[in-house]
Image (cartoon, rainbow, N blue to C red; front, side, top):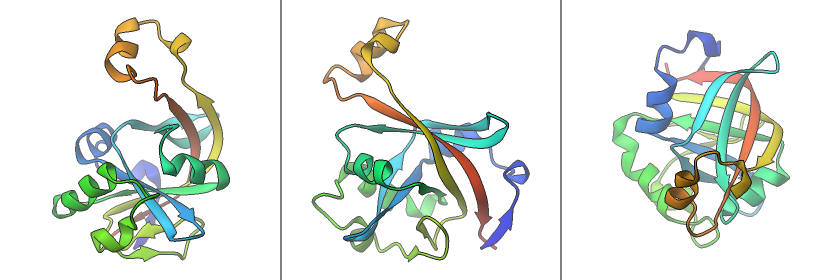
Length: 167
C-alpha cells in the first residue's frame, strides 16, 4: 500500500460509500478486529480537517468497539470482494468471526486494523459522536421509513489521518 493525500483520491466519494460500500473496521481485543459493512457516510471537510462520517446503529456489535477505540478504518474494495462485504453486513461479530468467514487478510501496522485486499483505506481518528434521535428529523417520513423499529444511529465524526491505496 502507498500513502497518498485524501484530496488526490480520484474516485467519487458518494459512489464509493453508497454504491460500492466499505468495511468500517475497529479493533476487537478478542478477535483482532470486527468489520461492518457501511453504505451511509460522508467524506469532506469539517473543523478545518479532512473528515469521514459514519453511521452505526446502537444494536450493532461494532458500536461497542467504536465507543472503546479511538481509531477505525474505512476500507474500500473492488467488485470481486462484494460477497465479503455482503457477509459482513448481514452477520454480527457477536456471533461469527467475520474475518475467518470471508477470508480477508487483516493488517495491523496502523492505528486501526485494515484489510490487505482493500484498494483504498482511510485511517480515521474519532473526534465526536452524536446520537440521532427522533426529534432530529424535520421530515417525519425518514423516521417511518428507516427507523420504524427504533434502532437509531450514532454518527461518528473522524479526522482522516492517513490514506492508503493499493499499488
